[in-house]
Image 1 (cartoon, rainbow, N blue to C red):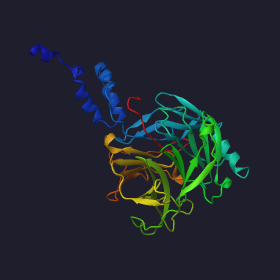
Image 2 (tube, rainbow, N blue to C red):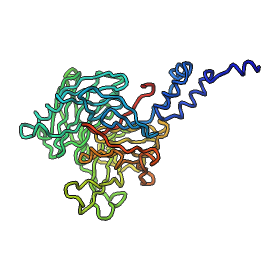
Image 3 (cartoon, one colour):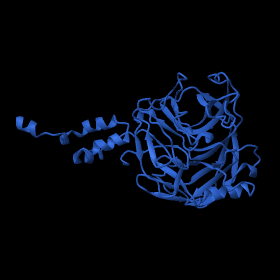
Image 4 (cartoon, rainbow, N blue to C red):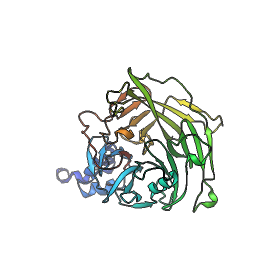
Length: 393
C-alpha cells in the first residue's frame, strides 16, 4: 500500500475531480494553464463538457481583456487590419483598401465580406465624404461556427446616424436598403435576429425585415414593416443626476426567445465645462428594458422588470444574452456594459463601464480596482465584446 501511495502523482488525478476544478475557472487562460500541467490532464480535459469561459473585451490592437480576472491577452491581427465589431468569437475586420472580413482569431478561419464602406457611400450618394467615419453592427441568424454559409446582416451608421442595412450571402452584397427608400422618417439604430427573423430598431419603432426564400442564393428585401409602434413615454427608473441632462441609446438584444429593447441612460453635464467635448464627463446612471410583443399583435413595448437567469452584454458593435448559470462568475439579472460612445471611442473602454443590477438598480464596476488595468487602446477601430469558446487556445 505504501509503495502504491508513493507512486501516485498529480497526473493520476481522476477525471471527475479535474472536471470540478475546470468548471470553477471562468478564465480561459487559467483553463489553458491547467491543461498544460501534463499530458494526462490535457487529454482528459478534452473529453469534458465545460461551461463557456467568461467573455472578453477586444481592445482594437490585437489585445483582449479578460473580464473575469483583468488579464490581458494578445492575438495579433492581420497586417493593415483593424477591428470594428464582432459576432460571438469572430472579429469583424477592415483594411485600408476597404476590404472586409470576419476572422476567428484562434483558428484563423476567415470569411470574406464585400467592401461595405463603398456600399454605404454608394447608397448615400456623392454628398457624403469618402472619409466619413463609419460604425458597423453585424447580426447572423445562426452562429458562424455552426453555419459559415449563413446570411449576414450589416447595419452601417455614420456619427449623424444616417444608416444603411446590407444583406450579405457568400461574400456577395445581395441587397441593401435605407430609410430614404422607404416611407419612414428615421434611421435604424440597431438590428438583431430573433426566431430566424431580422428586426431593426428606430426611435422606438420596431421593424421586421422579410427576405424572400425564393431567392435564397441571392435574397432580396421585398418588405419592411413596422410591427411595434412608438416607444412609451414613462418616467425613468432613476432620476438624472443633478446638473445633467439625460441622453439615451438603445440596444436590440435577443434573450431566450424574447426581443428586448435595452435603453441606456447617460447623464451629460449641463452646462458643459468643455464646449469642445461635451461628452467628456458623461456617465451611465441607469438602464430600462422593454420587450416587443411579437405574438399578440398589440404593437406595443412591455416594460421588463427582470431578466431572470440571463446576463446581458450590450454594445453598439455586439450585444449578446447569456445564461448566467452556464457561465462561471456571471451575475444573473444584470447588464454588462462598456464605454462605447462614438465621441469617446479613443478613451479607456472602462471609463464608463459597469454592471447594472436590474433588481437593485445599482451599478458596480466592470472590474474590481485591484484587477482593473489602465487601458489606452491604440489603433483604428472600436472596442467590442468577444465570446471565446472553450478549448480555443
